[in-house]
Amino acid sequence: MDDLVAVGLFRHGVTSANVKKQFCGWTDVNVTEEGFKALRKMTVPDYEWIVSSDLTRCVETAAVYWDQAPQKRKGFREFHFGDWEGKTHTELEHMPVYKDWLNDPFTVQAPGGDSYSSFAKRVEEAFQSVLLEMEEQHIQRTAIVTHSGVIRHLLSIFGPEKKSFSDWTSDNGRGYELSGRLSAMRSGEKCISLQAVPSMEKSNG
Image (cartoon, rainbow, N blue to C red; front, side, top):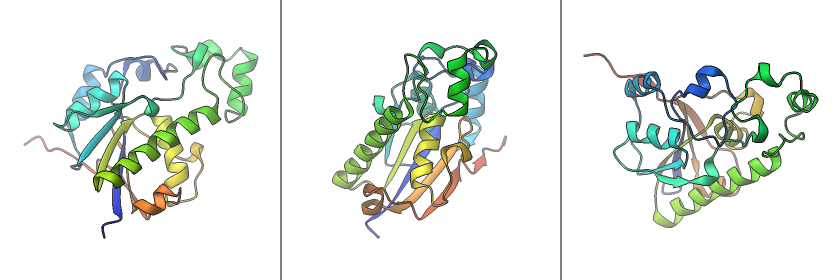
């Protein structure tokens, strides 16, 4: 059916910040060499259009997965952790505002960073702009390379299961493919089906 589309949501490869367990939202870091090795082992589906967060780790991941250069969109950046960028849980756990944020991240704002509502608005607007362009350009398969928080937020809205942001997981280099009616997704309705991607790794042969 012409209205049936698929959107793949892929998380970037492993970075040094991931390894060190640092908060890394808008800080622009690269995929590590080990991260690149892991990405190269994956077999990913083909897509007509590739979109990416404008941060380097996402652009690098897209370049490993597909020959087509991604269209970079700032709206798909991760949650901005403000003053906590580059810090670890251990470095922050003594701070009252951090404790408050851990207890209620959806209402407590990271100092100098995003509120959850501003993050959600930005991500949803970016996603809807992609869906609109898919409609206008008659594109049926699109991949978006982005960040864990972005993927989990979008799945909490469009995933076929009723699960909250906190219930979803997103591993480096992996993601999910949403399939559904474009008109329904443009209206904010849930997709018809969801599958994990990549579903397999390349053999050594």
